[in-house]
Image (cartoon, rainbow, N blue to C red; front, side, top):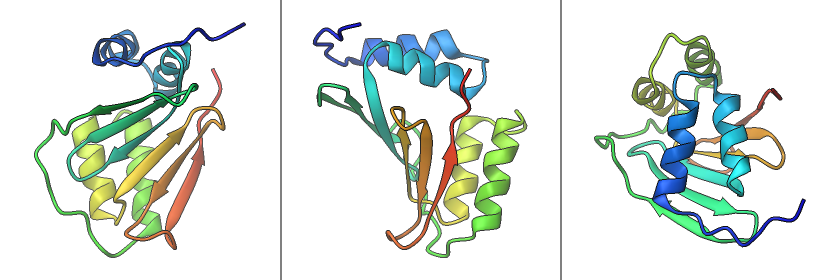
Length: 135
């Protein structure tokens, strides 16, 4: 399968989000991969996202949630608990961002090629990696 030069657009990302609405996260990942996304980075404090396509094209989606301060203290147990609550459907996405931010996560990167999410603390010393389940 050859990937044509796909230019990432807000519309493409929104359509992937809409197709995945109400479904577990791996469905969103599959829909993003289908439009040629290789990885994306999320700034936890305000939900600014940078998507990178397999051909290196970048699309920045501006912040669309109220900004808050992420904690400087990295609390791994709280990070894991917040991720689990979100995976179990107990929290919505803005609540999830707030919870991981309070636990010291400042950025996370979804590596769709490697099927993992890397949660990054206030500096590179602190990070937590979680596999994205295949569907």
